[in-house]
Amino acid sequence: MSRYPDGAFGVALLLIRVCCAFVAFGVARALSATPGTSHFLLLAAGMAAICLAVGFATRWIALALGIAATLAVTQSTPSEQLLLAGHIGSCLSIALMGAGAFSLDARRYGRRVIQLPPNTPDRGAER
Image (cartoon, rainbow, N blue to C red):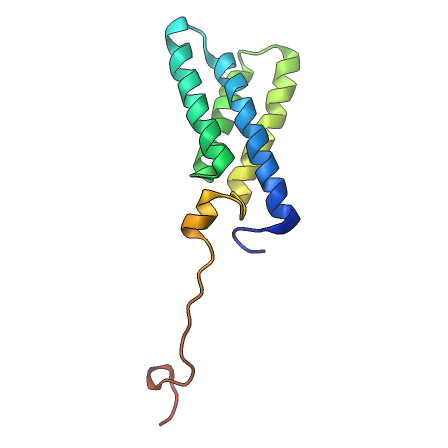
């Protein structure tokens, strides 16, 4: 498997990233206990949502969002806890699999081809 898969697998990763981006606002709402922190958390959720949707620093953002969702589980109702558990799983899957070919990470660190000339003296070829 390549580091940045494309095709149906890449589209599936894009869909998971976009879904996690939407849920970031719900996690911020669940974590905002005091009015002073709610604006900061919504701003952080917006930044995380944009980064996830476009695929920038995807693994780190997904890991941070999974940790935030884990913290939000303790402050939620039982039905919200089940939804957050599913969200934690999707964040961890993004953190493990990466962003996919349809992301900025793939454009920045994507596939590179290194061409080595065949039979050069430094590679053991005879003259």
